[in-house]
Length: 229
Length: 310
Image 1: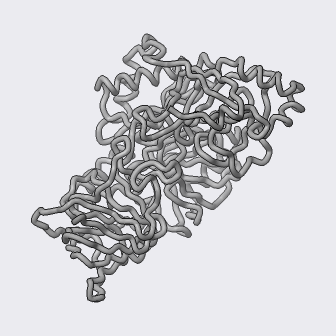
Image 2 (image 1 turned 180 degrees about the vertical axis):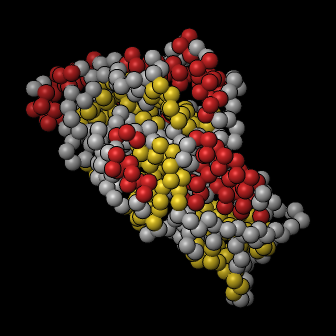
Image 3 (image 1 turned 90 degrees about the horizontal axis):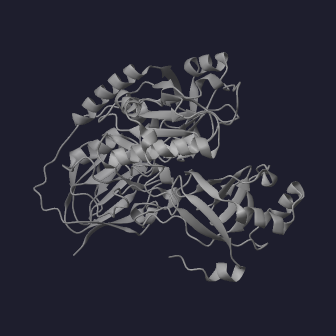
């Protein structure tokens, strides 16, 4: 449930859905996100520049020359967004992943920590029905959940300086995919050859907040010969 | 024959920018766009362009460019030291915030910004730039936008279309606001910080450090003490937010900020003072003043009036 709306400076508001980071809360966030997106598309509200969902919040940015925060807040309060279908097109995306030891950099640490062996970790990861909580930090990077508790692990104490594009990492109940080469502190368990982000495409990000994800194991050979659509 | 500028020296951080790329932050794409909107507007107004036309933004040191092709009406906005060198090698001092004609063979040498960071170079009709998702703005970190998402490089060419329009020169008196007071509103996690630190933030000076770019401005000053939690659940970020990481030194998030982040925010710079802020050079001492929404909105009215008067 939407708990509170506050201003972020003079050209943004945040819609706060409480402190929980779980699918139930995030689905409410995504509902409002979809509602705002549709309202902008149908020109029911003017001046909206961006709408950014995260685990438990939706941030809305607007052009102060077009609309003021009071009007945006009233728009949200006067409309029953909860009736919006969960999404027009939240979808299930299958993502190929190669767990070869060349890419699964932190699997040994995970084996020690979780007391599961390599095969069990892979099986758990493949069996998880992931949900896209949010996308961001850098373009196209998805934050997926929820892993089962037996796979929970903390961030690396010292983040790596360089993590390759396509690396799949886990921390606590979340899983991410690095869409750009960058520094990072997640436990790397594999790599996908799928290019999740291409600005030149009509839909630059394969995943959107609210989508579902299932991983599919591929061999190293399949990874190397994979062709992005 | 095509008209173009050849880049003889790219400058430190020269990119093409317009008003930004919107509606995609939920996919991790930050708006980017010009850092100083007033000067960006001005550079376009000076050459008779629509205000949203893409311009060349430079920081500290600008580029050295040589024109080949038709003459063109051009302008540099900001507090900028630059020269025009004609094909005979004669050097003429350039005047900022005033349009001028560049002829084939002329070089424009944008030497440096003076007591400021950003300036803009515009030509009538604009440069020939490809739009990506309705904007030419360059986001170097993600290789998005003009020039294949890269900064300008030596020996590249910047093309422009022929500009047959009768060139009308234009001039504008532009004064930077000299004071160092930046008005802010309370941040979402204002109550994460101790009473003493809340007081310090609005009474002590914070120094702009060298670790400042289009993404963020790192400040240095009295340590801000977090009494609640050093991390929050990652949430969407708004330009001008001032976050305080574990070390207690504030960072103002600027136009190329990450789209989400997990540090608590003590304040947000109001829109009317953003341009003033981004022009502050390293070693400048800032003072933050707390205002409420109605003050910020009135200040925005004045700001809009100012930039529409160019």
